[in-house]
Length: 337
Ligand code: EPU
Image (cartoon, rainbow, N blue to C red):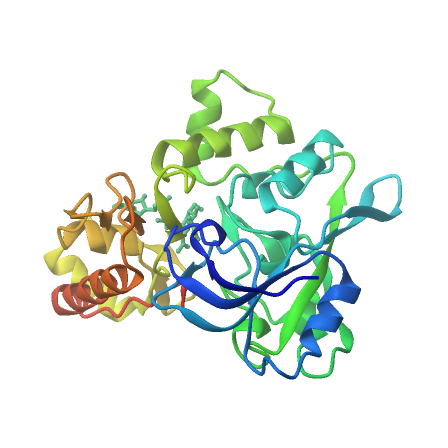
């Protein structure tokens, strides 16, 4: 295990921001992770998975630990379902494709989400009507201070919309080492309620879809509106969709008749932040080498060599404008570091 110095993190974050790590190490076994976490001479440590949910705004003076634990294991199976454990460093989308190759169902709607398996529970990744929590059984995580490994069940994780215990009570305290899912082997329940999926399947003349068809439809929808981080740096949705009271929503409808919403409870609705940002005039806006994606206003992009601080300032300007126009605060979904 080699601790390198002054390493560029450009290839370790999907925004493609070129900042340096003062110290950097990649770990590929639990033993290596344990050894590195014990190193007292580096009191400040930053764990890095796929780097798909972060905006780096400065050089990191910490020891950056790239968690690269690989392996996918079938832990148990019945006639109907299977228990799969994947190590934290597996690429999320490749893991989803592995499940689909084995005809294991439950993750197909989550195809093509950037990032790694180990960071997926932190924000309870979700797309097209499905969230990680729907198939998540548990995860193992190493305490950064004590190096003790604990198991967090679905209930322990306290999952919510883009939210979990790892963003609150135990934030920064654990390194997730593996995640276990319960997936179906037959009679796969299909999730096609999200409008765009049905439309996509129809366009392809598919009337009796398989989980593989759903994955292909999701991939095609994502490719049509979300930029590929390998081509244009980005971190997916930069903001969360805000939840507001029905009372406030009805007032907004007086001025903005076409404002969309999704029901949350009897008293609250969720409003697509992408709509608010588009209405505020930012969709497709380009400022030199960064801007707002032209097909999805929720996604901020780095066209080439942008500074994290420029993107952060743009996000603040968007927040301020949305607040002024709609009296709605939109919260960043990505971690700013
Ligand atoms: N909209 C606009 N303009 C835009 C973008 C969206 O008006 O530029 C409006 C439209 O009314 C559209 C609605 O917003 O019908 C919803 O748009 P979309 O289906 O693209 O979904 P989203 O709410 O913008 C969320 C997730 C995405 C996920 C999609 C699909 C969040 C923060 N984002 O986006 O997740 O892929 O739904 O399920 O919840 C991510 O988290 O990184 C991410 C990409």
